[in-house]
Length: 123
Image (cartoon, rainbow, N blue to C red):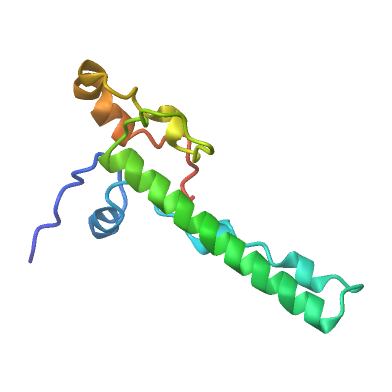
């Protein structure tokens, strides 16, 4: 029987294969971002309902992609940009200052694994 690999990311428990697939950060699902309730409104006609369903799905998908990219950036390169961003994603405030090599060397491990504020969807 093959021995299961240990959890390299230190995210605690779970299937090691799932953690390798997500890079060690908590997985995200489309259901957490998609809200299709507006398409059920009685005062909308059929075309408006289809439009609402399409927009809800598209915006949910974009929100999912943004969150996955944010978690990936936190895991692989948790450094703030040199110039301020017009819009920061949800993980950006946890990033380390640009140009601070000492902070990067001493704190990057805790930042790249700092997902304690994210509710585990498996609970």
